[in-house]
Image (tube, rainbow, N blue to C red):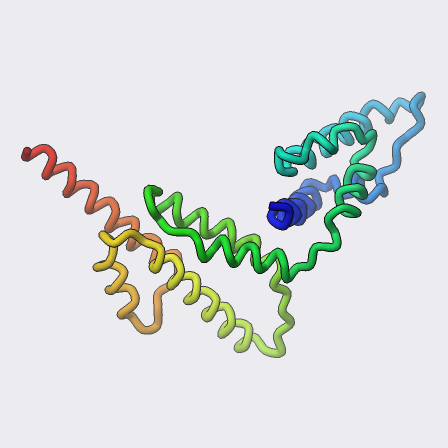
Length: 200
C-alpha cells in the first residue's frame, strides 16, 4: 500500500538523522567537484544512503527509483509523488492494520512485536503539547491501557484464563508486565503439552 510505503519513508528519514547522513537527502552535503579528492568519499556515502532509501521502498515500485544520480534527487522525486498523502490517511491505514491483527499461528512474541511495530509507527504522528506533567502521564496511561486491551483481545482462546486475571486487576499493570505474564503462560502450556505427549 502506498500509505504504508510513505510511513516507511518517515521512519527512513528518522533513521538517517540518527546516522548523521541527513545532509545527503536535504542537499546540504554538496557534491564536490569530480577532480576533488573528497569526491570519492562523498560518492561512496551518497551511494550508501541511496541504497538504504531504495531498500526502504516497496519492491513493487523500487525499480522506478534506481536511476537517480544523487540521494537528494531521488528523495525529492519520491516526496513529490507521495507527500500529498495526509497524516490522517496514514493513521487510518495503520489503525486498520492494528484492527486486523490476531495471534493466529504466531508465537506470543511474534504477535506482540507485530503490534509494537505498528504502535511505534502511530507514535510518529502523535505530537501532543501538554500543559502539565499530570495530563501527559494520564494520557500515556490511557494509551498503554488501550494497547493492553488490544494485545489481550487478539490472543488465542487458550489464553482466556490469563487474559481474565490481567483484566481483573485495577489498575492494569504496565504492558511489559502483561507481556511477561502471557509469555510465562505460553511456556507453562508448552511444558504441559510436552509432558502429555511424553505420557502417550
